[in-house]
Image (cartoon, rainbow, N blue to C red; front, side, top):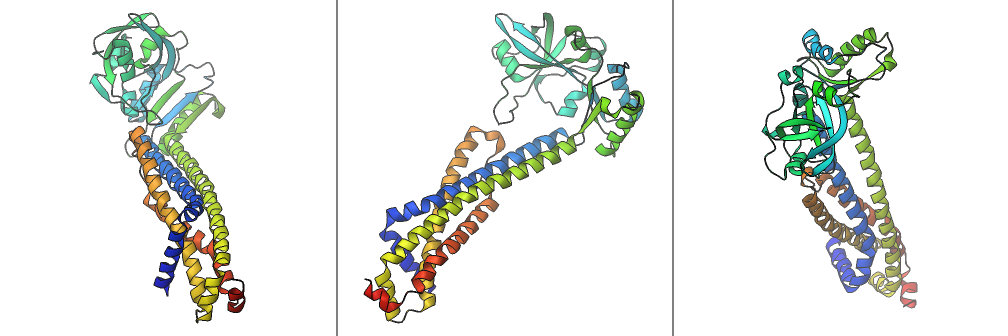
Length: 391
């Protein structure tokens, strides 16, 4: 009976191709929206999670908003590594100045820090080297620049060994970072440079005491334990004022990010599911029209002995088939869209999520069943005599 119903359903769809396609359109749009949106968010989530993991989920960022007239010198920050056994400690300050090389001039973001910052942030050099502790101690005018800065200021040539003016001060380039990709998968189009913290103090009048530093806990110690140590230390220094500083745990950021993206995925999936429901209403509408048009066929089938179940199955399978064909077209369309987006932003490795495809297929089948049941039931309940008479 099922096989016969499938053949009859396929024949009915093939007979009215354009009407069937227009009926499927709502399902196609719904499935495409669901699969594309959720797949992109899942891929982006994985990329962001991997990026945070590569930086180390145990990193702590300390910011001091009120030093209570007890400014923290960079030497004191560095001493924390020996005093408390932290794996890495690096003071951090930023400033924007004008970078000039020949006729090229633009604003550059300077980050003053120490060599440990490169290890903490996972900075990778394309060529050259990072500045060392001696450069920090001696206030050496050296800098490590990102690839965009090297390309902009040195026209793609080797930047290492060359000199550039940063805030009116001649600074020698000792290293160039690898070309990294930004948040959306595209290359960062901004000038950036890392210089010794003490050098930034000479270039920028706004940088003196340390207002921010990053810490990696000792081996075998969790980020929460290290945070407790830092909290006690800063409370003791800053007169017990917990509002005078803040400590950001990278693990908390990662968890918050996953929670936000999870909520976003659920919302986007819900919005896309609404399109599927609209498509289901379209299926119900056209199936009711189909039942009316095929009243004589129903009457003849009942007259020759077709049961309630066989009539019900015929129209229900037709509704499910329309929904699943629309789903299949939507999945193929989704694959094309995700492929194009993946080519534009290769860093994210965008791809279709098998789990989402499974949900789309199951939901489409459910839409066919739910919205096809009423027309199928109406067809199955028709009186054969009245059906033949109305023809």
